[in-house]
Amino acid sequence: MIPGDLIIGIVTVGFCIAIAAYYQLGLWVSALEAKLSLNIFNLIGIKNRGINPQKLLLPLIKGKKAGLPLTINQLESHYLAGGDPDKVVNALIIALRADMEFNFNQAAVLDLTSRDVEKLVKASITPRVFELLGIRVVAGDGRELITDFKVTMRLKLEDLITKPMEDTLFVKLAERINNLIANTESYQTVVAHPEVISQKLLSQSLDVDTVYEIINISLIKVDIGRNLEAELQLQRAETEKALAQIRSEERKFLAIAKEAEMQALAEERRAQVIEAESELPKAIVAALQEGKLGVMDYYQMQNLRAGTKICYK
Image (cartoon, rainbow, N blue to C red):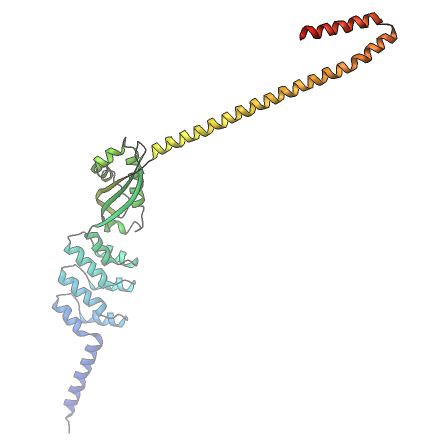
């Protein structure tokens, strides 16, 4: 028969093992080994609030060993707000190793905005290289240039909290490139000294009010395109030629219209003369009948008309 004291001892040990397993007291022991100021009641409270202690203690232990000044309350508050303590701690460790100024509150805010704070920290450490390819710009002398730029930028973590990730930096760059090259006297200046364009772009602080810091800008390729000034002059010449042809046709049309008008006027006068001549015999007969014109006077008039015709011939 098993003694009663032994049964009580076995039950007590089993109960303690069950309690330890339920509250994951092994994590608490690990926390103590990491010299965290954490007592058993903290662990019990975390468990009773429906939080898996591993979600808090493992990141806390990792952060403590990395040298981060974190507390269990900070991680618990962030977890209850919907954040991911493990990603926050990983981001802080990366920032610490890179000697960056980045604290828990900044990391927590970025994490709560559904951003991958760990990736953002890595992106801010390693500069990224972007290419702006095939930018067509017309120089001051009307020659088109096709340019390729390489832009090296770094993400500014300190601005990510107050500024949106999407900005108009590349639009600003394209506009400023267009303005700079358009103000050059000749395309040859750009081709011969591309570094001048790069230096001017860097000096203009285009990254203000953006989440990026421009580290370097390089004009890596310049291709000579169309001669737009020559094409424009050719178009002007063709336009002027077309206008001259239109004016010539207009003058020709006006001359033809004027000639037709003169012919119509001559025909009208000829008709008037014929009409007047047709009325003359009637007038002579009336004059003879009324005695206003004698027979001799009529013959003299006929002789006069005949003589006049002969004279004109």
